[in-house]
Length: 397
Image (spheres, rainbow, N blue to C red):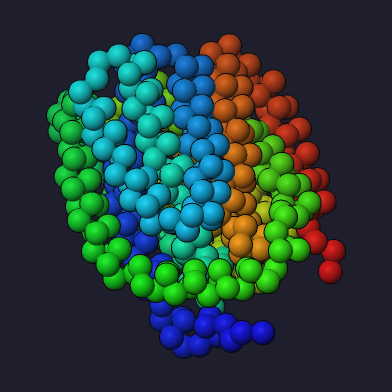
């Protein structure tokens, strides 16, 4: 067996470089799209969209973004053009600042979907580049630490737009157009990081390509991967989205404060991502029972439609999101072989994104029709089924 560079001190140094580099890229990207996500639900509402439209539009946007990852992940694996998809995905983030120029919810939804497509292009490629160069640290720690840096932008973005809305009397034009500034910084940082990091990722991918030539028998995705992905689908389908929590918040608090609610979600996410990543590396996929079980609580509180309950719902949503963004991805890395990693991430995100479509439509309908009890029953049933599938997916060792 060839010597694995992840076992060396140099490999750990490179791993930290990769995590920090992609963290910086994600920081600027999140200022843009996470900042926008803090105000998009209320923005669509002012353009005439109902809760069902907001839920379905944002959910469908997430699905399109996630579903396309199976294509971008597969092509990235076959052609080894991971960096191409990273550049394409971050470049298309310009669609978010362009929201400043629209006046109809239909056009706004198209731009939101383009942003979700951009994330689909870059995410499998980026996650693969991270996973192949950070195994010496542990994938849970690597993705958790990356998510922590990522969340600095996710917190800064909503805070920035909350200030702009507050000082401009809820002027969405100024809020969205201000995002052209971090977009320019993003492009500059991306070029610099590409020059610094690409040699390391090329070396890691070259070594993996040699190893994968001898492992054709491991080329198929295992059964446990599909069971795990189905469990995540049910978990996501039964979890009310942060966008609909914000939609509800728009009726019980000042508009600029809704962005701060999303900021709180991202801040809690930033704390729980690395913590859960560390614990995951110790106990494995059984840890996912925790976010699955907690996924009932955001809808339990949010749908009551009061100021206090919206805040509580946002807190639990942040905890769950932090675990989703770190250990859900780390589990895919542990289940699949490296030569199919990009494809696996792409397919996993299809299941994950389809859950957002179902969740967005169902909870949007529950909100519009004021079906509180039915929503809670729906959430409990889906999370029970998700936990059962999660247990079935765990390898027997």
